[in-house]
Length: 485
Image (cartoon, rainbow, N blue to C red; front, top):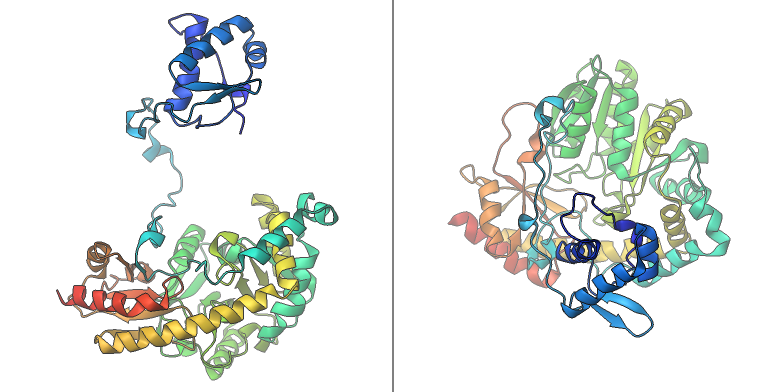
């Protein structure tokens, strides 16, 4: 990799010669970590022309740096950062500019106050990672994804990758969603009723921004996905929480003042319980009676491996009151950030315009790669392979949980996690920190109870999407031992 001469600037206040300043610029770049071993420096001719100085000045500076082993010369190829150059300084050694801006006063909206699920960046180094939403590399089809990405980069797909779709999306991906993904959920939709989003989180934000304001009321499940709580707080709408039971959200508990109801009927987040068909119909009847809309987050639909999935709420909707949200980020990989929403044209017109205002559309290359991967059958094969592995892991984890006397607080017909309840005196935040010393990661449940009242601190989530089946039993044993300590 070559270092551009555009990264070099002369400082008129530098105390020293031009040669010394060139030496300082290169040395500082190496010591700060900006210039890395084996990267090629600009030629003396190019750098001299860029800075408007004599070429001999640059050559002399390079010669001094060469003597100090900061850089190395490779024949007629030029100068490179030496792989034995002094190591970059730690960030704490770098000088910081004194800030005089009163940021607490000037920040108009605080986003950091929203509840967040914390996952350590080095989670894969833990031996027992019971954390949700991470990819198991042993299950993903790397080879075919790479081939599809290369195909999307090819000349035939060049326009799909580089074109600005304005408010539109890749027609190949939209066609796959409308003709393949949605019919599996019993949903029939035209391509102009589908909007591609940057994952389900982006879809929830679009829906909330379009439908809610300070005079309207949103109904959410309790507990619920913490990201939704943060999204709704930005709209300044009234938020009403409804406790879930073994069948998810109870329609009769929805207040008559509701304007928008957010539900996860396939697998409730985080308990994974599934809403029965009778309750789905009852919710739609309430929506028609009290004139509210339903946002259906089809959470982990693909992981319904214990019994056939129930029809989506959207498939039962005869009045156009349901907006359906799906995501490929969990079924493919989290970093993909690709999802979709399905709804009436009047709603999608506004959502599409809002999306165009903030990000135009998801990247064309990502859309075309995903569309190719799906259309060639790799996606369905991946789902089948993942569901088989998760079913085995779930069985092993359920047996280990029973063996060690732990309590399951919720569970549906699949998913990728268990919702757990610890004894009342156990604070799972403290438990999670102690377990890290045992190379075990769990997710405390308090963030799922944001909003009304004081959240309970004895719930936690155990996911099996990222942990090998051979380590599950030992990991559960460590959790039980730490809980009893």
